[in-house]
Every structure is written in C-alpha cells, then in structure tokens.
Length: 506
Image 1 (cartoon, one colour):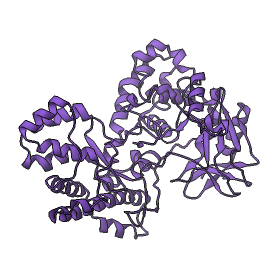
Image 2 (cartoon, helix red, strand yellow; image 1 turned 180 degrees about the vertical axis):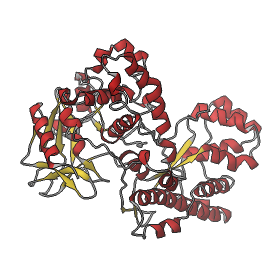
Image 3 (cartoon, helix red, strand yellow; image 1 turned 120 degrees about the vertical axis):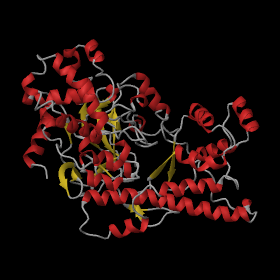
C-alpha cells in the first residue's frame, strides 16, 4: 500500500509543475487487488476533463536534458537511440539527481517492486511452460543492452555518472526496475504537428462530432509492442497501441523510440477488459484525460490497454483479467486471449505427406508471407495462413513451380487432405503444456495456490481452451467432410486474421 504522504507529495509536485487536477472529481487511492488507482469522488459526466499534463512534464529522451548533455552524436554511437536503453538511462540518471531532478516528485511514487514474470523464481516460471509468455520475458536481452550499451556509456562520462554511483544508482537491478516501469506504465506520445490535427479531424464522424473526440491522442497506453511479446524491455496485440521492449526487439514497429514517454498522473489509472471510461487526448501543449462515459461516485476510473490477452497482461503488468467468456467458449477467462502456433509445428505435421523440398518451400513462404507464427483467437477459427502453409507443403512439384511463378500463396481452404494435418498441429500444440485442461481447472480450486502460480494457470488455461475448442471443431468437420457434407458446415471457416508472428530468426 502506498504511503499517503507520498501520494500527497506527488499531487503537490504535479500541481507545482503546472499540472491541472480536478480534485473535486478524482482522487488517487489504494484499491484492493489493483494497487494504486483513481476513484471518482462525485458523479462525473461524459466528456469531463479530469486532469491536464503539460507536454514538457512527460519524461522521455526528448524532455530529459541528458541526451543533449551527453551529446547527440555520442548518444547514437553508444546505441542509446535504439530500443528502451536510452529512456532507461534517462530515468536512472534523473533518479540519481535526487530532489534536483525535475521529476523527483514523480519518480518517488513509482513502484520499485514488481510481480511480473521478469522477477519470478524458476519454479514459478516453470508454470508458464507452453504459453506465449516464456520466450518474451527478455531478461537476457535486457541485460545484454545493459552490459553492451549502458555500462560503456556511463563509464565514458564520469562527469555525468560519478563512478561512486555505478554500483547503486546504475546497477543492473535498477536497470530492470526502470525497464519494468516503462513496460507497465509508458505511453506512446508523438510530437504535435498541424498534420496530426488535420488527420485526426479526417477520422471524425461525419455528423460533426465533438472536436475533443477528433483530437483523440496519438497518445496511447504503451503496452509493449509484440505479439511475440518482447521483454521487460519488451505483445499487443493487433488493436493495441505500439510499445517497445527493453531489448528494443520490436523497435522497427514504432517510428521513433523518443515517442515512448512516462506520463505522470495518467499512468496512475488502472485498466480492465472493456472497462474504459476515460481516455488520454492531446493538444499542442498539453495532454488531457477526459471521461468517455458517465462515472458514478465511488467507481474506479479506468484507462485502457487495448484489451490484450492474459499472456500480455501478465508479462507487462503482473495481473490477468477474468470475465465471462463468449461463445464458442464457456466459463470465465479473457475474451481477448490468443494462442500462438509456430510454423515448425505445421512443417513437422505435414512432413510425412510433403511432395517436394520442404526447406525450399519454407524459405519461400518466409520471404512472401513473412510469418512464422500463427495466432488463434477465442473465436476458435483456424488462421487462413496456417491452412495456406499446409497447402503449400502438400503441392505437387508441378503445382509448386506454377505457384512460384505467380508469387501467390495457396488459397486457404479446409479440404479433406488439409484437416487431418491441422488436427495433428493442434494436438501437438496442446502437448507442449505440462498439465491438462482439467488439471488446471482443479488447481484453480485450491485456495492455497500462490498468486504467481494462479496467474500462470489462468494464462495457460485460456490458451488450452482455445486449442481444445478449435481441435474439436476440426474433428467435427473431418467427420462431416468424410460424409460428403462439406457445404453444410459454415461454422468452421478459416480465420481472416493474419498471423501475428515475426519472421524467424534463422
């Protein structure tokens, strides 16, 4: 629980630095199960401004003076302009300045302990085996940046980074803490331009909707950038706003790492699946948090992370969402959950029936489709790219050569020869977990289960439900096809959503 004095000091700091807060509408409080958050202290109407943040009060590599003092050329030479390492260094440096830093009142209220998998024990991490979380934690990548970029940089400027502070302020532990703060709390804040304003107006409704709505921010809650979800440095998935990992693995997905910023006060709002009732908007000199629907007194004020899957929420924020699921799934979980299926599982399942050079076809697929991971969502539809890849692997040599000449992927159609291979893919994917679906359901009934393990079980259970549902539908379709009734099944069409994976590192 946060110290009330620290909260009061933060609010005072915010106001002293030209931040505007409507304290008659909103207050920061400790909320059971959610840490610190914002509560409505009165009924608040839709379209009400809760607080305003001067742009220069956001903390980024644009607003910190460190990059200029270090020298822009040297900043680039040390690789501090790529990924998150530059922002992490700025935050550590500002913290090392103590009360002389412009952001001291803000940094003092930020958490220094986290319950994300980055800080889990090996025993707890084993509970995530088979999930989309394991390969995206990124601790090794983060520490590589620390050792290869940050350490050489601070050693080169003892005037800015006194050697006596290296083992304390600039330790790898502080590096991970700052990286986790960015991962869980940063926003994507682009510079203001007239072009941005015009573009936002173009997206407004034709009926002349409120100008405020047309100014909806390029400011988006930074939830990490990868469905391959990167590390503490690190998925959101598609509708999510772009974010980055400490290791900068996804830096190509964002225009400029300098757009990643810490936004005081805005990052105090929590988020929950489809609960958003406030949103950050931007103007030339300020960012404004505005309600998007009426909020009753005593209710929590929610921002949005874009409703990502639990694997993403756990990795970035250390919590999961559990709400009623939607058909075809039953029970409770996260309706935004996804399962990732690697292309190598597809290749292995099709290998015994392939009629040509598998590697040649896989290489061609990677060049043309740029996808080595397929994403299955809670609609339990087979991704069309997965089906297309199976078709590619099964083509005769002559048909394969024709396809090469056209540079066009095979159509995604679930035929009698494709379905059995797809079934094998989903079976093999289910086998990658160390527990069964029923075992996980029983584990959740244990009141003594630790928080970390409970969250891990919820994540893997959500993935297994999707796999089981899709597998059952494929098996049913196989039976229907076997009877020659392919036209009677319209509930098992391939998903139109593209695979969300990144090209294989080979």
